[in-house]
Length: 256
Ligand SMILES: [Zn+2]
Image (cartoon, rainbow, N blue to C red; front, side):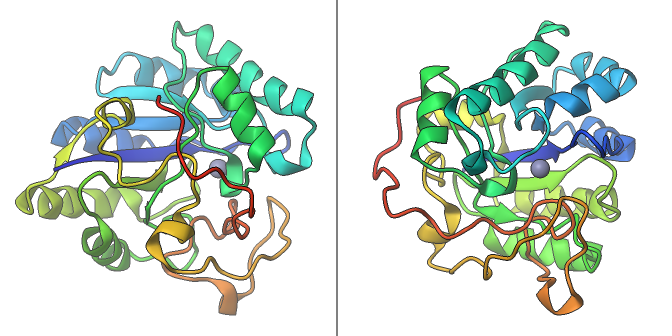
């Protein structure tokens, strides 16, 4: 039963964020392949981290836009530029993306079309660790991820230094998932083998039958009110929950 462990490395123009090196150390010690969705700004701000990551065969890269906007608020040209600038940043390290994950899980038909035209499969996630939430605990993350992971799952964590419990939760998560028969693979492997539990072009809330949290406007730097912080929230401090799925979401994914 293959699953993909993924990390977002989010950065905006005004907020470069950091690099959670202990997370990389855990991946190396546990020999877990992982896919890191980088925003281009993060790549540019973290040459030392990029040197470490590009030297590590366990790591593959994916595209998380350039400066982490709501992609549905961008023009088609801007959507393309967001993707292209990050590809250029990764290209300076000799890398290219295997997938595209829109910030905040916010997408529409135009976003999907642009990504498809660039032959970069759009991918979300089906298991949220909730690691950027101020209320996240290692125990809660372990419980949530282990309970919700199934064959083909795509699990989302962060590695940009806003998460505080991820490195301490990961060893236990990896141990329990392995004990349950899961094998960790890159997301490119999951997509190419056609076993991803998440339709790359459908919002997860649709598939899991759980409605997304009520949409709320939040600045990138915004702190959610405590009552809105959900232990399994995607990214309470940087990535608000995805908006309700658009009615026109295509029913079938493009073959990666
Ligand atoms: Zn992000």
